Amino acid sequence: MNWLWTTEDMITAMAGRPFGTLPQGITGISIDSRSIGPGEAFFAIKGDRVDGHDYASMAMANGASLLVVSEARLAGLGRLTVPMIVVDDVLDALGRLATASRQRSRAQIIAVTGSVGKTTTKEMLRHVLSPSGKVHASVASFNNHWGVPLTLARMPLDTHYGVFEVGMNHPGEIRPLVQMIRPHVAVITTIAPAHLGNFKSIKEIAAAKAEIFEGLTPGGHVVLNRDNDQYNFLDRTAQALGITNIHSFGQHAKAEYRLAEFNGSDESSALWLTIDGDTLEVAIGAPGRHIAENALAALGVVTLVGADLDKAIDALATLQPEKGRGKRHKLRLGAGTLTVIDESYNANPASMRAAIALLAAAVPQGYGRRIAVLGDMLEMGEFAERVHSDLAGPLLAAGIEHVWLAGKDMQALRDSLPDSVAVEYRETTEELKDFILNSVEPGDVLMVKSSLGIGFGKIVAALLDKFAPFADTQREI
Image 1: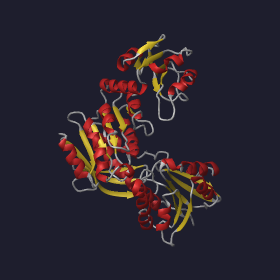
Image 2 (image 1 turned 60 degrees about the vertical axis):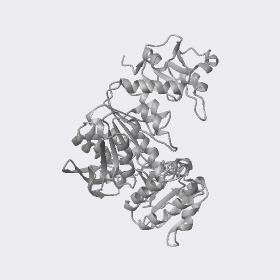
Image 3 (image 1 turned 30 degrees about the vertical axis):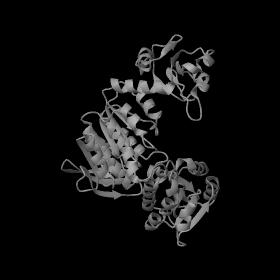
Image 4 (image 1 turned 45 degrees about the vertical axis):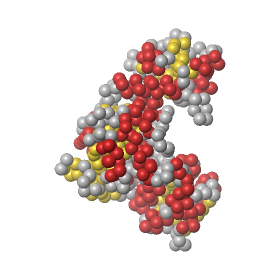
């Protein structure tokens, strides 16, 4: 049997003790009792809202072959017949297992952080490295104090490339995570005003992101965005830590992975990459200049970990945007179509601008409209009014004439737009959703974007529920 972990190794790594007759090993790890599969171990983590111990019986009913539980909760689980490993604290034990996983791995390890583009770059790396070997990467945005150790602990022994996303919204959060990951390559996609409410300045955000350098393996590599205003600060910070392998990407003349030319359409992109003195044409199956910039970083990483660059470039042609991160839906509306660009997963000033640029490049059908459907950007603190108001400039520059808004902070944008823009404002997501369902017209292109907590994913879901997917029969013939 090809175990992810033998239970003997788990007990040793986690400093646990067996309770009951343990299986020889496990095939996977889960912290969700609803989705656990037979042969997997359920880690009963106590989170901010729920305690996994309360769902131990459900995990057992759904096929868990092993539970990892805390000593303090063991007495209340005595009626369960599934074997257990008992530890002091389940999350701490998961962290110890993650550390053991990293120690035993021979994979090339990559860590990605940044204010914008972390998940997109991580998924891009998964996609372009796959032709060169077995890739293990974070699920969704598992990038925090439980997501990173869970992803590490799940990494199979035969992994060739491990790709980890690292997030933060306060100083000091990246440091312990990257000490677990110990990457061979650390990527910072860009520094932008995200989570501004928790920081005094962009420089503080850059310093927090730079914590990723502290876990770099000896002789490791750093990849930075040379077009970003914080590049020099990050470069100096890396050098101060003794890092000598510092690489850069972007349009800057001195970038090692340089964007020589970009040509975007509403559904795909093409770029010309200059690397090692050669200029290579790269087709990407997803639109947007920001996607092209992420591709520069990803292809730079490919060269640094010794993967096949030609195969990686070929793979980019089949890249598709992720749900909530630019995924497009073409729906049937009347005698025409409705295009929905789903950017509903998250939002900050930089990603808002990128999404507005995507909308500007989209081509409505017939008399259709380009409509920006925007909700609040959260965690902006005292800067909230200003950063929302400032979105008026990119919208006007892009020629967007229809803007539909919801959320308390979006009132600032409403008040900043001139009468030449048709603005609809509703206080809540639910009210805006009802308006949209009754107001879209054939040919429209909607770009839907907000911070996750505003719930604009409900707007996308409602549109997909009401309107059927459009099938281009001419293309199918």
